[in-house]
Length: 505
Image (cartoon, rainbow, N blue to C red; front, side, top):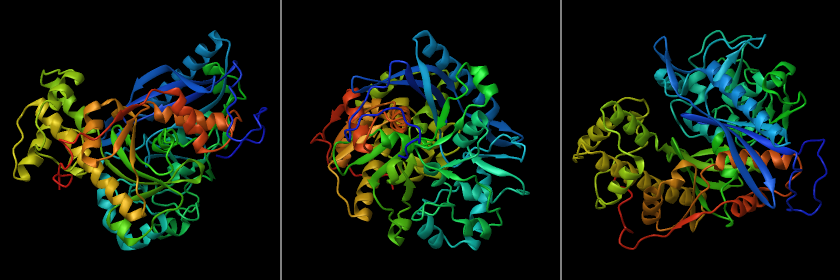
């Protein structure tokens, strides 16, 4: 993490933790594809305390037949959340020391020379980029792309989306967290962990792969300059500071702005080698490495190499996630069935193992619309039968995700020549006891679950490190997480070990 030039007095012992003064708190703007939060973080007595001051829904909207993000509404919620943060801090005699922003990856907004957003940003769930894949690959051989960027092929990667744009002269592309930071500070920057998800970033050099921009006919200055986690993007614009009630010199600090980068930074690992699953709408499953794996075998296995905090590499695969279950729940509610999640998971856990599975990574499941029937159709196509019963469908999803996790971890170990003994599950999925137990059973590894708010924790800890309240690197940040949270441990159940993790394919 890069340190700010003007740090406050910090402890001199490497790895030490200094509680931020009682008057200092850190604000995390943490937005996922289905919801967002603004959270205050405090360092006290060698631990981190979180306080959610604002929650809001997020989701795609249909505009002129396309799936987009309502960025104007999203930014209004961010301002409301920062107002709440300022109010809570003031009541408690505190001052917000800095703000960090993280969101999902790949999506962007286009802004003109005057800083005006030209249109509401497209969502990665819109199907428009599918048509760009073949033309892009005619200009840039997939093997060459991977050897430079190390990026997993996904049809919605930024470079495919940009290939569908026209008349980009005079415009800049700002990834969603960078767009929010720009609206707050007036400064255009691109944070490196998110830049590494675009397909236009050199995984070894850590710079934009400008030759790819040229090959695709895109302006070389399409993206703003890069910043690293821990660097200051800028301070609040006077009008923004006045609107939300924060000091005008409040800095916006770059964190792991790709939410998975922040989540992995807060994995409470005490082992040198471990596997992680950031489990939420999507599942991000992989290993933390020092160097990217750019082999042809890695490309064929469709693994990605993305930047992490402290110069690490997140070697992972982007898999289907709990979107499958949340979409099923949405459909069941529309049909008049409102099963409580805990009741649903308990009923699913009571079903015997060995039931039908799906491939949760199939693009067939990306778009919203009657997910239960989609899952049953996929099972039928595989020659099996799945009852039209919420518990059975839920168990199918859980078994399929756990099997996918096991395959991915096994492949990552082989491709990176690295073995692990423990799997850390963070994010919303860490509260899903059935999923965590099935993951332990199928992988044959101990699973450590928690914290659920790993992304916000990673965001806040990078800010605290930049301010000088934590010294050292990731190991020291993670020790804070261990001391701050109760973690759940799941061990493999002998009766379940040996479940076929390849069954979904």
